[in-house]
Length: 531
Image (cartoon, rainbow, N blue to C red; front, side):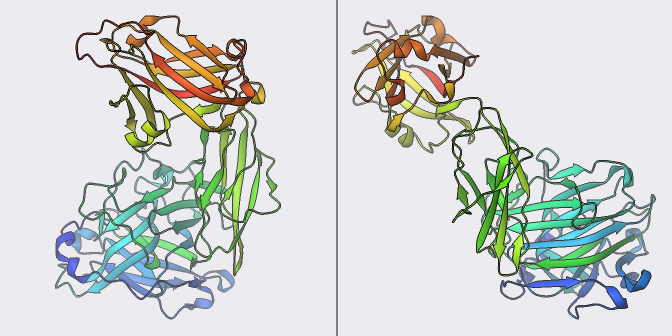
């Protein structure tokens, strides 16, 4: 939104203001009977030079009227690049903004959409260089016909001082093409904004209000840090509240201006759906012991949860008392659906339906829960006093592993890290038959025997050695799989597993050079059915 006015980033900072305080507010505008339902509408373009921008009601059949934002002059001769309308000066925090939106005709190259949590001012041009409306902060949902109605897109944007600060939108699913070709028509568009840090923004369009979903963006998650979708700019802070509105836009010289129509526009604080589902929507390898969680909008005083196998959701009774739910052990590889309907003073708001697929394994350890080296060292202490040999490795925040160093040229000539479970683990559940872990080494490592030890609550243990001492030199990730029957044959009670040890060395000198420090990486320790 508003890409052409980067210079305002400097000149307008002193005029930013927030209108009023955040409230639980609602407004609705139908435009019927050739009259505005709200007397508080404010309409303004930028720049406002040619005075050819209009905002007016259009007669519809049987007084079912609608509204048009229109510009007849090209930006090349001073016509407005965009025009906007704000229904009131009421500010919203958690909010759903919706409207029936239409862009007319094959020749149209304009676009339009919804505005949320906006702050703005209407200036005389002494600061901005031209009279008209200046948007200082806002979240925006576009319906975009720039490439003609055969290529309609919807996208989400964060706008600071009239400048779109987005990047990587299409890669992250925040900018996407709408299926089909017949887009020279009306749709019902909806933008939900929930939370104050982070802020979650989701855009959806439907065939009509209450009708089938046509397309939905990924949820834009805005934090006070520089986010993956955000340009490197000085202003990263989230927008915590603001006013709601509609807009139309065209920054090209041809065709001149824009003509966008709207109907049934509303902004409601008791409308946005729950967000931030865990597992994430579409997750492919959720734990079979997963605990569902989500973020509710501030209006919610209760909830109804629907959960079940894909195509067979059922209402959970009794409803959860908080925004979490543990469904019990799930089936390997099964796809599940779930939905959270929030209950508030104005009734029940139906949520979005989310899906995930349960993994084909039980997780013993995936190392994702550790945040620091100290965390993993506390959970996986090693046997060498006075030194640190266990560290957290992370290619990215969502892909962590354990780095285990060893200097087995020194006594005791072996290095082990041991995880003692908070409670005993049952390694007989769901018919699992194998224990597997992923590992990788380094080509300049000295060959070492690698081993596992499993111990039960009674102190019985089994030691399993990897068949290849040169496995420590592997440059790629490999899975080491051990039959659980081999562990139970050594007398270990698999229903009462208390400790797991990963080690290198056999008690004799490794012949590593003086001060040589080698290491391997361990990840994804799992129990799996027979393959």
